[in-house]
Length: 415
Image (tube, rainbow, N blue to C red):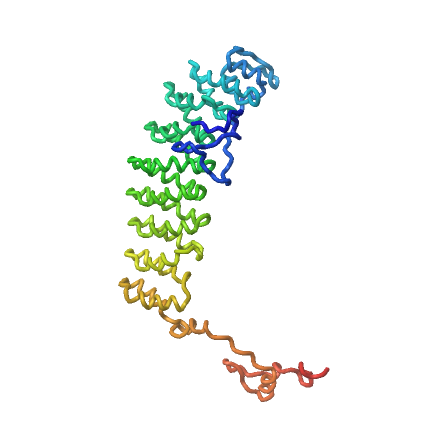
């Protein structure tokens, strides 16, 4: 399905990605990157003018030569087809028509050249080019198929609706090279059209083939922070998959949600915390350790986690409790929890929370709670110095040098 508005020029400024199920434009948000085809390297044909390019590409001009940098260079139809990327503006339709003819040429080298120019020409006029791309992916010549695979990879992030049907089949293809190109294109699409990626992942997560579900769950990591609730729903579904690798890939998305959506990260972490796989649970603990304390349900999840059936989870939650509780609340909770905890290591941690170190701690710990001694008044220092008495805990004698010099006025005397 081509997504274009009106019957204008069909340039990229008018291109809209559409949901293949509804035909409605997909909301991708305002923060996505602008989708553009990266210009391919230019050959010697880069100095040809549009008339020369079209003449060669259409066959109206068989070949010609010209001097460039003191060297005479020859140009033929293959050069003209590659150079169709130079034909833009009011002659863009001519470039499109010439490229269409080249896609059907009997010479494989011309078809390869056409595929090299296709992504850039499609930015000006897409027309029938996607249909030709679909056919050339099954071309009998291996070089043409390889060029078509590359064209699909390049065009997927830029023309999501144009390659929609092609991509659906290519992602599931038994041809490893084609499938690899399709997956690369889909992952690259995550930076430009994250909502479209979610549409594909949605259907892929329903496949019986576990390898497709695994690849789809990996792709979620590209869009989970930018695609909003569409991606969050898919992560939630993937976390319930029967395959542990799918769940691990989905759990790897959770830390990426801490900054853009901390509340959703906590909600998904609560679900993940009780997974039977340790690596999945670890991602939930990472979220709870890093999430802002204002993220709603985090405290309740951690408190509940202290009664988790897994010892390692109970331990991690106990170690996080001081972030969420004051000393008195923590001591009261630990006194209650220690009665139910059977693990000796965890009982030791709880016992440390119950103890009041200001009273029961070591000498060093108790000293931390002592207030500093008040300074000795100046008058007392003078009297002690005159009588050679000792002051302070160390019993240091006050020397005469510590007192003001004889006859010197103090702060309260007139000078």
